[in-house]
Image 1 (tube, rainbow, N blue to C red):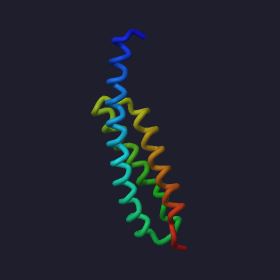
Image 2: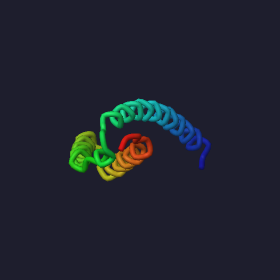
Image 3: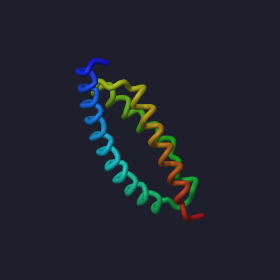
Length: 96
């Protein structure tokens, strides 16, 4: 790799690092809201809402296309986010 390309790559990676930190802050905020959501659910069976998941994924696909982002990437990311938080809810659910 040329020195110019290496310098450019390092600059791009620094930009990605900044975005990663922003994402971590967003996930922190999201986790705090999910903690509140857990408290509103009475039973573990209430954790998974397949209709809501479908609505979210359709909305993300539509927004991705509108913003010219590959919808396959965003669908995969959101499915991972959703199922990661479902697993988090199960681990932290304290009721019946």
